[in-house]
Image (cartoon, rainbow, N blue to C red; front, side, top):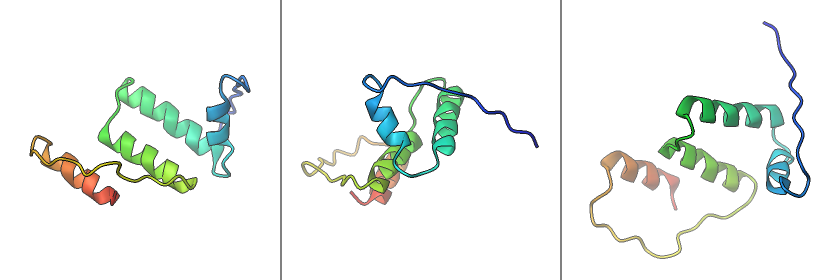
Length: 90
């Protein structure tokens, strides 16, 4: 198995949020690969799994995610979405 190294540059002001995310102590290469794969595979669309992973990443770096107001249950959400959101424990 061979590996390829790719160099990427960032503007420290324009991309400060990305640099903070990349420098949080976790594996930078893995984060960059996951981000590239998500865009490539989803052609830019965001899935519920993408949202879940983003929330988990935020929780990993110590950001507390909590509900603002009690959500109204009008039954319009697909069952799979309700199950996934319930698994978040928010």
